[in-house]
Image (cartoon, rainbow, N blue to C red; front, side, top):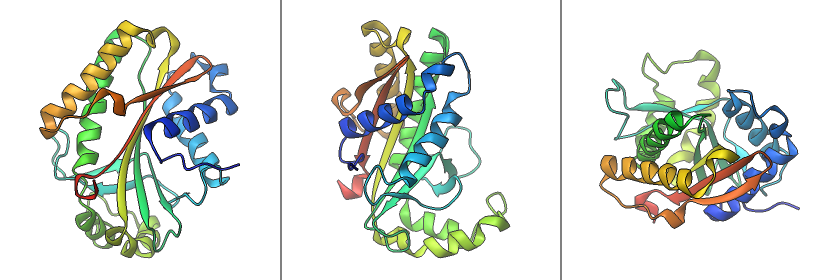
Length: 227
């Protein structure tokens, strides 16, 4: 039975946790590059129809245009881990841009990566659909990929007319899912987001679900102009 995983942070956290369990990611909990495995497994379960009509928008990670890139970046373009659309890829009603993160295996990495979550969420929060469409149709030299040109031309027209949501899915080892570390994780995440955007995101917009040796934290929200 399929569900709309992007209905709320709670449904997204629960669905992603289910994928982590089914994919047996806990069996390789010591592997330090689980973000990439999670990316592939979430893609696989999307394409299997476990989230209704949502499908991945193309066969690659995709670029988007943000008016708030990371500090020090020379470009306004970023690559998102997953981007999904429904019900039609060519004429979608909704598009969700999704960033993934394995929070790390030490307190130092947890704090640093939590701030990175705030940076990534800020960039997504300032995603510009019109400029993203232009980026796909007329990619600048640092974006050009001949192997993706046909895909970008196929899907670009649908970007502007769709409603847009943004999401984050975070993989956290159980030893860092206690009350103390969770408070640090969420505080750094939201503090960095606010310092970059000037906008408050309440902690209750980040929801947790359990997944074997890990906890999954997730948030999903509309872009400001679609709120």
